[in-house]
Image (cartoon, rainbow, N blue to C red; front, side, top):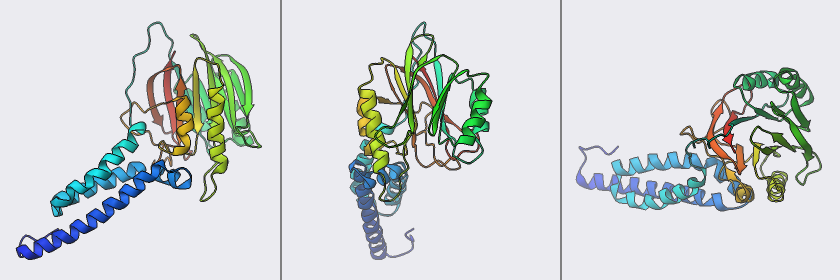
Length: 312
């Protein structure tokens, strides 16, 4: 803070110094925000940091108002660009259920392989009265534990690779998906709900590491191609996409499906569960009305679960 007892000249100098620092930091944030439109690892990293750039900008604007009001206008550019970048990932609003429709609740969680928590997650998700449960990052032991936990309440299921789905309603046309890779980390089933058949995709995108994200990007392109060719009128895609909401790699998926916005007033951040910093677990739909979308802390996974209520 600038000491009120200092001379006017000293205060102006201190204000000028603070202003220069604020401008430099603001421009750096602007560059980081713009990077969310850059394909590749740069855009992936920038997208993960995007919500927190907004918090940094808020602090910066406050400091400018207190220390160097003349530079406040300079911050309008990064604030406006941040707002534009965040709009596609902003919270949404719950919709009313269409008349004479039967809402269905779909929950999805990455249960973290080898954590031993799949049974607990499955039990807690079942207690939420979900109609469809999708789990990802399953190893053989966690898959078996989840199957034993859900067998009685969810008689219809299908599993392949690291993903699985359980349903109260009958399942048809179950098929594994490689999405351009050499192993199966995704599936498609048709759930025969009381109102209509719904094509449900569950995916566990490949992980992203510094300089290594081609496999994830291949899978994201693959799921976009799959739903583009899918004749089903009602589609829902859930799972761990390993991509923040603003990641440019999700562009192809967004062009085919509607990204489900959280309706609880939050950004729906899902990872890490202890202190969520990014939303990397997503829900996309086509031909369905979103009645409610939120997250839930279940089991001991490092991911929160997504909880989505839909209607035809």
